[in-house]
Length: 495
Image (tube, rainbow, N blue to C red; front, side, top):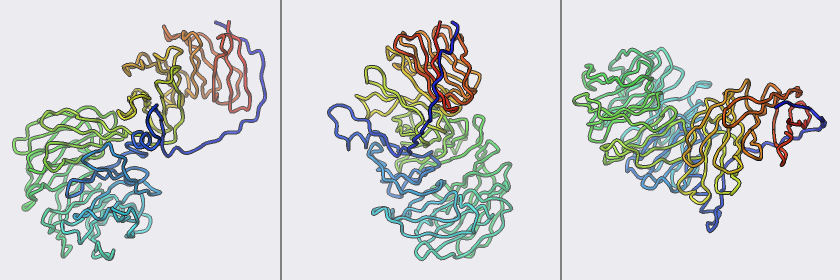
């Protein structure tokens, strides 16, 4: 196949960009309100952490756009968003469940009334330093926070006044926790230590050295065990009263970002950046199971009150609900993308919708007759996906992304059928009318034509002086039309 540039049309491009705040997919026989609730199951934002209310009725999901609060008994119900203008790293409920506190990429702790959703105050830390760790005392009277200013701070939860500032860490404080009796505070830091503090006097009780930066600390429900995990690829435990080192749990490769201890204190769950969740028997140290299903780093873990179920949240923007004894996922709660939707396409018969978003490596494939089941997640790209297109028979989906690849997917199974390595970022894709070839529009200004069956490049069409923004075949398949950031539209004749 050769090419001829038959004409160039100068145009002025006007680009309208809108921020997606929800997707409404309307199948026959459903109301718009019903469909919105089902399509927006997880809402926007990349998941940073999870927290369960003391009564087990509400689940808080900390994300990059705020905190989503769910009915924990029915995660498919539409959640309420407690919105912020900054990333939320931690969100915790007061013991009575009436107040939600959150902290993140700011120097403030935001408080909300859970029932009304109204802001109930802000606690201001050191200007210019993020607050990464946050916890309520068991009686709800105090809050403790850990900050990038290397301090741990105790607050009066009612008045918002600072009670005391605890100094001792030499690097960012990343995580904090109260002991179940409220007498002790544990803090973990990038200085590779876990420190214990008297929650009343502020006295430093103990300094526990570790082998890596600490990302998370947790007390066991009975307060006898302290666990911490971080960048040394282990979960370390100590006797909380004496500080005596206990067991060290080492799983598969990866830094640990989240841990949880079951309500009966018998099971330890830990998640690393290898996307898996390890389950251990705390007493024996035996590995009970490895839970696999997430496709990106798991950032939050919580056990339900009966200990039979584990809920995990991940940067793949899904919640997964696991049967702890069986070691299997009971359900996957999928949501919308974490960024602005960059591409959307409908299959020729209208039964499927594919969509992708900037900054999100996933492609979501929705069946319009079964929206309540959520989308099929297509994972394979390693950077943002910019364009999606269905084959004429609807059996194949074509995607192109900033990982310099175009990928082909079976729309029935979600299986990846092939990865075509391009020479630059793929910004646009299109199938020919007979489905035998496809075109990519690339960031280097070229339009490339490929054979579907062999993945071989058939032609390279050069002439644009800027990024190619769209490509399309004419109905007879003899021409390709492309547009570019150079302000031109070109029509190419294929031979």
